[in-house]
Image (cartoon, rainbow, N blue to C red; front, side, top):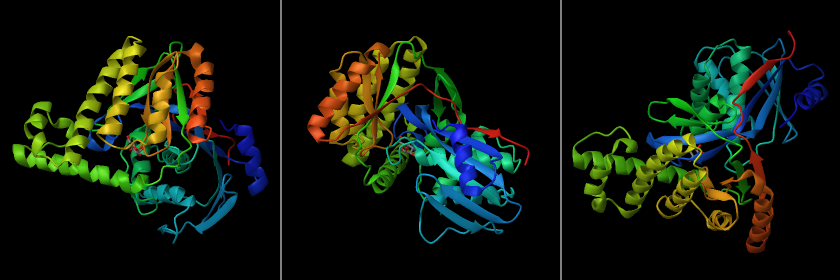
Length: 393
Ligand code: GLA
């Protein structure tokens, strides 16, 4: 957590004036439901206790100053009628992409000083970019008095990620949970209807441990888009063969998949099988959470990992090893890779009294295998984005 005092002090030292607003938005860990969001399926993420935080003041002119505490760099541009993408992509694109979405809605983006800070690890699969976008959108929502609901903020942040400034065709999960999370709850998101249902998480029975493999997620953009294309191809083929137009993979009944699966190209068949079984696991988990049955939740996590490894093929040696080590540690209910894959993090649900022994064994065994030390973050399911008015500007 970045304290409000810290960000206010840094703001004064950079901009020589007091901050008027502070906004924050958390990163996320996905408990289960991977690569299902862009296929109209179910996901069950929770917000983590790490966030992106911004402090801002109005300037009274039409210039936008952005300072990144992480990069120790200032970026300056004119907030002219239409913001254009800078020639090369950098950290400021996320803010500009969100500002562009406000302009598209004819909402004012005034001249501002903005300090950007945070402690969500970058490139680790904990959605630092979604947290950044939702944080910027939450700030601009207040400053421009747009009154967007959290759901609209999430959709606007996703549009910013899809647009020219960032250009990643992500699903809705990351921005939704960052904007709408509740403390001590995971959120069941139906990515077809966009309904979100809070699911209580009993932290007395289980702790969420996030294990950062410290393997940078190489290839994630190109492989992610390839998986998306394979899923779309599967949906198209099954709709054509069955003469029914299914609106997403989630709507394909398992009998229909079984009827046509042998005709599908092998990779496409495996991607679809992962999606169909993963949606069932998410729904089962919600039932198990309702009765604090962490043992069964754990079985679902292991099954999800196996499906991501063998059918969706987005795991890697490091993540497989983490899951294997976790499965041999006392007090672990279940473990799986979390996020897009190809590196990044795994999540384990661990009995609270066993967390310390779990951490030491994980660090020791993983270090022995890969000669690097995994970072382990313990987090309660945390609150979604918010904004605080510090003084009347
Ligand atoms: C990334 C995307 C999400 C989701 C996950 C995989 O985090 O941003 O929308 O597709 O990968 O579940």
